[in-house]
Image 1 (cartoon, rainbow, N blue to C red):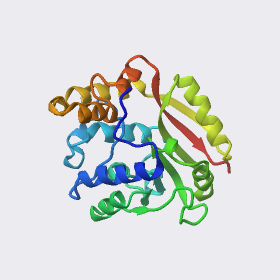
Image 2: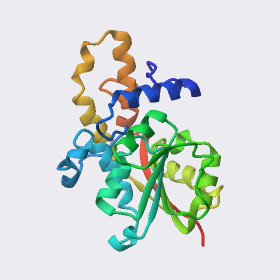
Image 3: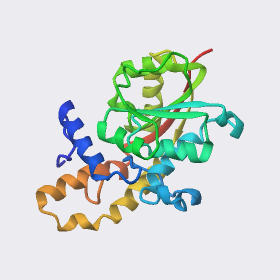
Image 4: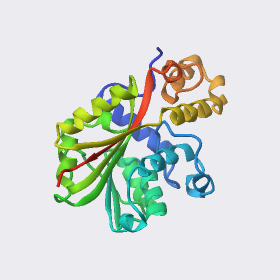
Length: 260
């Protein structure tokens, strides 16, 4: 497998993500996750999400797992870990209108971009949250839990209200059943009760395949850049995409609850 552009060292990863977020520009929200296809019509029709509708749809799939009506959402306080430039929070505010919605993001560039767009994303460490205890009704993270230390779940437990919900959407190398057990054990170690798991791998694979087929610009690049870009973006012919195509990877949305 050719290496991707994302380094394995902590400082190298941080610098690379700062550069990626900087490349998005400051005029729109942005995020990078594996996405879900097809995107619903409301997302496709919203100019704020037109550039990356599949990435926003993956957030929508996650929010669909919360068993609330519109009034429950309007009374809620929500926090995203690894919020990026705030695209998921913007979708949450647009479609569910919670009382408050904020995010924590390690990247300085991403947090600054989000704030310039009016989205409350604060640069900070998910393992040391600068929020009071029992503050939030929902904490969610998308394609971020694998990069967070165990202390982040302990902090999440602290800032959630009793009965509060933790939503995690994550890629996993293995079967959906193995993913379910892995995240159940990990969240359980922090005191959470497991309440559900949904396999959305089919929609994620469709998103990756559609993105791969639209990335013809990579073919004209020098081999050094082309091969690394293919692995970074799951482009056609990459080993990372083949893992999804052969069923070695899955994506699950897991629900947890802080006990009363």
